[in-house]
Image (cartoon, rainbow, N blue to C red; front, side, top):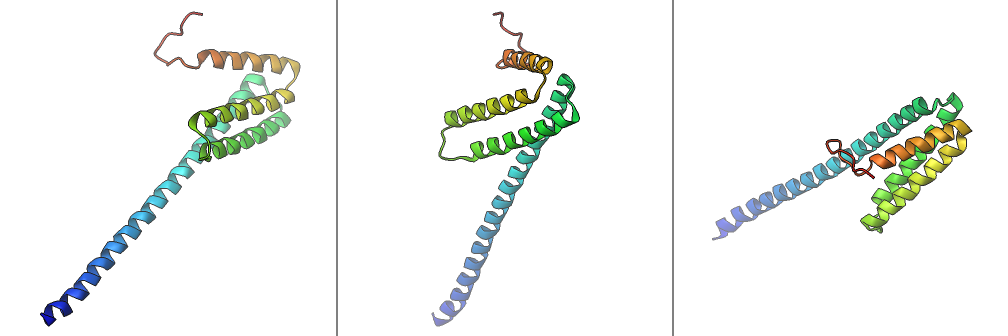
Length: 144
């Protein structure tokens, strides 16, 4: 019986060590995955802001000075959006409301930078975007 205990205790310790190592490795992998997912999401949003800047620049014929200011506004908007998405104290509906508010504020700041003609075009573009919301690409838009 004494031999069994002398053999069993080290075996148990070895199994326990390997089990703890596996758990620690799984946690590290989970942390790495969530970090890489967050980085991918950030990159995606940065790409969206770059595309939005390019699109606005083309549609509104922005000057270089306007482009620089719009880029800054979109960057701030992106940071605020990310903060709102990560805010665990807000419900999903509250997050959506907060994000709409952030977007409206950014649009207002952009509008303030534009000439009168650009403001008219910007208003038209926003109206077009709003009319397309809620329709799927495959579905015809409902008559109003």
